[in-house]
Image 1 (tube, helix red, strand yellow):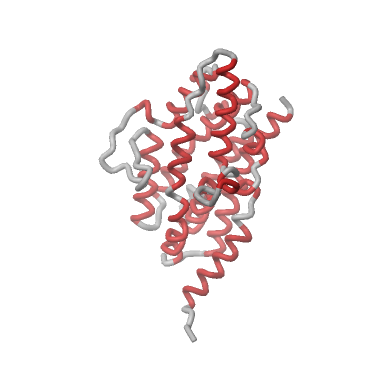
Image 2 (tube, helix red, strand yellow):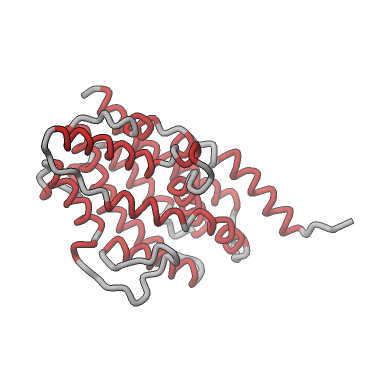
Amino acid sequence: METISPAAKELSGLKARIERELFGHPVITDNAYTRWFSQGRANPDQVRNLLLQFSVFSNHFLVAQCKRMVNAATESAERGARFILMSECGVGLSVQTGSTEGHVFKTSDAHINWLRAVGAAAGLDTRRMGRWDEGTNATRAFLEGLDRTYGSRDDSLGAGASFAIENWAAFGIGRGPELEARNFWKQLIVGLEGVNERRKTAGLEPLPLGFFTYHFQLESGHGSNVWHELEESMGEPGFDAEKFLAGGREALESIHVFWMGLERARLTD
């Protein structure tokens, strides 16, 4: 009979808890706002509100990402966090490898500027985009939750938040049409394609969707790496499974607050 090592038992037990406590979160499996948005019925004000709040998140996510980089427990995690940070700031990134090595920096490729281009086409004043004061209470609570977890100096908390965020963003990709259709990036893309069909009928230029399609393609290569990263985290001295799970839960709840803020806004519009 094959003997299962204590480390393998620990990993198996943690995976079971992750399935129960993280992967079933509604922000991963049943995001009410993005499910509605995928129907393509958002009016111009609702589209502008999405872009404005997303720009606040995108711009201030840089702070949490920088903290994730400097607080990383391993050089591998630090390097990966640095690649993401550089990509957010405008350095080209390989969708296949997730690396920015040797790629060119362009101000226009900074993700906030990419979003501003979409916002301008939608009729937003781009000077408003990305500013903290333009964030709703829900958007600010989301960012503060990411700062506490993803940006934490406690690597177990940070690793748990990072793991949960990666699984949220990559949910369903490559797992068949039904599950992939529930990925939030996919739902936003499908919804914006519907908006563009209406804009075309009205004689308006379509909104550029490169920001959203790029992130969907990028996440296609991330989902397969998260379990390996978990095994690396568990091998680090001081790894705390309870903190890991707590960081993941709080990060997902913070993300859910952001989307539910948009959901409440569109229901009361």
